Length: 362
Ligand code: CP3
Image (cartoon, rainbow, N blue to C red; front, top):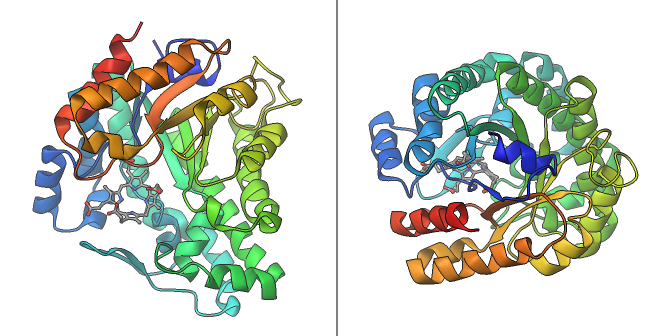
């Protein structure tokens, strides 16, 4: 039974569930492993430990998707930038200082597996255990979208500052778009290697998609995302892809779906489409998305993670509200998820309530 994949193919009307950042700090068993390991990056590059962390939430909650434990910033690291994670501060990358630092990165694309190969080992270990013990859970691989990753390489802490990247694009569009293209190439290679190692679904995280003006959207969000999809589909047409472009406006979401799903494979069948799933953040009105987007694409989302900081009763009520909207839709294809990652402060009981409510809904 592949509930996740069947929803992505729009062949199933019972929602699947997984949760962004489901492997992480809200889990006591994660905090223990993390403490013993010393650093977050040690965990990412130790196949046994990373596999164990990927499986922790599956053992507890039996989600329909197991997301590989890693990070989107391993790509800039593999391209030669220094990366560290400072507890409480988040990631620290050695930055690109000027646009002239971009071109030299291209020659490093062919060497990224030197850094990334332990991650392919993690995938093999997880896949083995899933196929032996958790057959109903599919393995989700991922990467960051070019714009979001570029923002970390140029601005470092996008939540504090994110204007340098845009100024580079305005002043030196060709050079900045070369960075986007390098990231398209590196991400394509990385995702194909993940698929060869065993991932069954791909998600591309564009967490900062909403930080660009509309006239920049096509160049740095729409085209690069669809280019990665095209590259993957060329070799692996049957691997479903989920895009998560956070913070976009409704008309931008419509444009992505129109160019990636409509009139290509057309409605119900997924033959020639470029992607199968669209992750919605919690700012998007789900009724609107069900009406305008779900005829063409499987929707994923979009409960505010802050609900999980309340009580089981409130979690149950909100979860049922979302499921009622989906039940009343005439289209197939829904993956229950949060509208962004689960927060470390989430009580386990609330997560348990969320999963049970989705699984027991009829
Ligand atoms: O469970 C999963 O979702 C799989 C693992 C995963 C992590 N990061 C683990 C992680 C995934 C898919 C990511 C993606 C990621 N990483 C994104 C895109 C999704 C999003 O949240 O917007 C981004 C922007 C990053 C970059 C990143 N990694 C930041 C900004 C931080 C610090 C903020 C924070 O949440 O601590 C990280 C660290 C990180 N990545 C942790 C985990 C479990 C916490 C590390 C720790 O244990 O200290």
